[in-house]
Length: 190
Image (tube, rainbow, N blue to C red):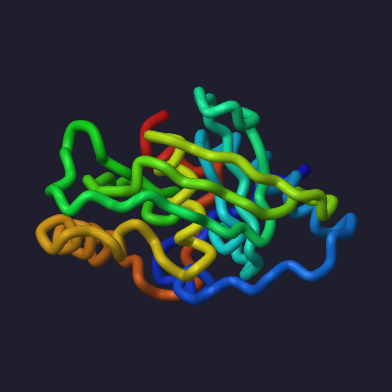
C-alpha cells in the first residue's frame, strides 16, 4: 500500500463530477487500499478518490458509529438518499467541518441528520447502510467530492468569505498543489 498526495482546493479534479467505475479489478482494489492507507496517514475520517487526483466515484471512510455499519468501509458508485436539511444557522460549536483538501480551515455547515448509502465494494458486491449524526455528515462530505463540491462551496456567506480569505492567503485555487500525509505537517494538528 502507498500513501498518496492529497490534492488541494483549486486542483481541477476536485471541481468536476467524477466518473462511474466500470471495471472492478485489481487496479481498483489497489487504489482503494492506497486510499485507506492515505486516509489513515492523514488522520482522516473519509477520503474520496478526487482528493488523491483520481476522478472516479469512490470514497473510503473510517468512523466508529452506532448505525450498524462497519467502522471502516468503501463505497464505489454510491447513491445517496438524505433527510431534509434544516434551514437553521449552523452551530459553530457542534457543526464545524474540515477537509483534507482544504487543509487547516474548519467552518460550520448544516447537513442532513440521516443518510442512506447504496453502492458497491471493491469487488462489485452491493453495499447498503444508513448513517445518522456525524456519520451521516462524513458520508455527505465524501459524496460531495464525487460531484465536484467541497464543503466550502456549501458554506453560508460569512463563512465562505473567511474560507476564501484563507485560500488566498495560502495561495490555493490553482492546479498542482498537494500535501503529503506523514511527511508534511498535519494541517489539523493531530
